[in-house]
Length: 297
Picture 1 (cartoon, rainbow, N blue to C red):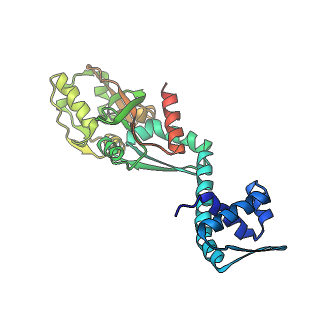
Picture 2 (cartoon, helix red, strand yellow; picture 1 turned 90 degrees about the vertical axis):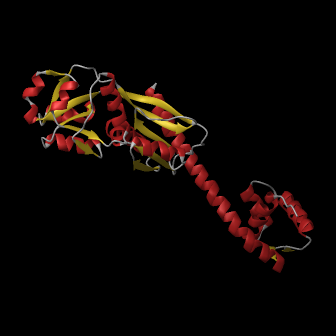
Picture 3 (cartoon, one colour; picture 1 turned 30 degrees about the horizontal axis):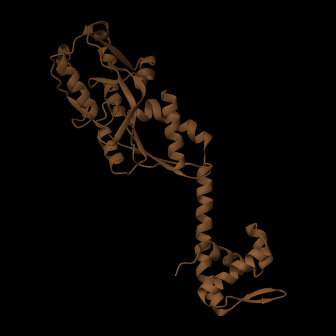
């Protein structure tokens, strides 16, 4: 049997207020329409739901049974409508982002701060991943999108949009101050301890290709899990490292590290947004993605 949900909705309010006129007022209708609809509902269900009187209505046993079932569904639907309305006005909602440490440090954190100030009711879930892990999280539908650094390895249904270019520089601890006055080639770096991210990172792939193009061997002495770890190791005088210039800037100003000059120009990299073009986003995620894209333009 099919019964229009609107009939049940009207029944819910009549049963709740035990009054046709009051239910009509809440629903923005009039008493004759409400009465007509309830008569049709009783006809379709083949039972009497209300006992009418001058003081209002009372529910029959069948009406009580129906109200018990309908009231639970009606409350849940009302709650869902309120949640959707709040989401549409950014009062509530959540955004799930997978971000690499570098992208978070030099770009995303500032954008998140501005968005959170604008929409404090939106929950932010940030996962700290390597670029390959972040891309896989997007593919698996575990996050709304990823903010990573190039190269990304994004392909197929994934779309990549570059948000901000950045340069990387070669740095060392204070013990390498004398070396900072020279111009070094990639081949010469073989004589000094080199700190890099792990072999599976996209950063390592980037520098492997860079060294190969200049006929140099990339043989790091120390592997770190994050760029922050690399910076700590550099300050501990354990070697040289290629790091994003924005992350090294304050340490260079404090003279806790030194920048070394390299003969070969390091290719520019980018912070990039990666998302599944076929995956629908909720209102909050869609708005933040739009803000990122607009800022990039």
